Image (cartoon, rainbow, N blue to C red; front, side):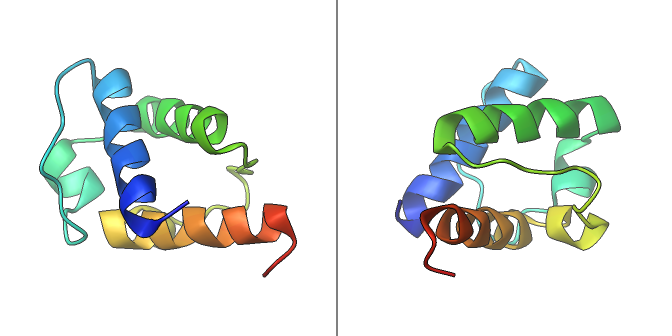
Length: 88
């Protein structure tokens, strides 16, 4: 999965969870500050991203820094995909 595909997957997950169109985000977009995510929205986003990518995300191991920006979350997702594929 390319970086652009990961970013689009996250955007789509955010649209579903927030129940409004989300598009045009960039890697600097602050998830909490700009999108007003709450803990329930984060869990929904994580589950949607898991389904779309086939990875498993343990919320207990997820640090707040992983969710600060689109970049930090995309980095986390890419690392999880590599780990799932056994190429970390």
